[in-house]
Image (tube, rainbow, N blue to C red; front, side):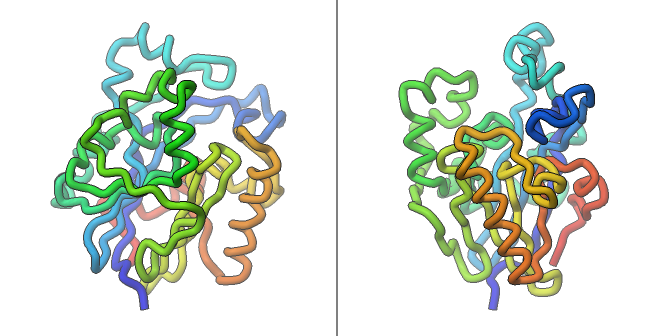
Length: 258
């Protein structure tokens, strides 16, 4: 039995990135607009968010946005249009941030924690090693530390794989970040979905076992292979967060998977 009833996928904007940053060293001349996604799970134990998108306020000033986001991998700042706003999309399906009982963070990069501060009543689930890295001296110096810095956040630290509830498992998939985690979700009709987060950006990474951005290449490759093994053994569907082809053909909110 599973406690998960519905899965919503939210398209929260796009990052402009060189393909070679997604597929290590391959496609340097190609520029991709890759989706930014967040997820809502309607469960018997309450509403659960997986990641919270990018705070569009950081894009309001063009000069500031370019200073924050433009570099050798990202030739231009992200694009977040009004229809991509996470809170607006939640409101369209009748959900307010205070209705959400848990937020699970894959990791602490800015396109995953942007609206965390709005979920004031939620328990925030994060890997202990990721929390430690984010709150280290180096982590506190990052541009987006303010997204996770509120003393009111109700952190719940976990160590490694963890059953959040029946049908919802967080699994440690380090590499992209020290404490990156993915979700394995069992739905009553659609079967099992593996929400990869940033283990790798594109389906191509999983098909050909190609690395993308990582702080630990050995762990990143092991995580790609681990998710592939879960898919092979369970018949699950891989849900890559940043893959444009997948996301553009997915059932996006207000539609859902049951």
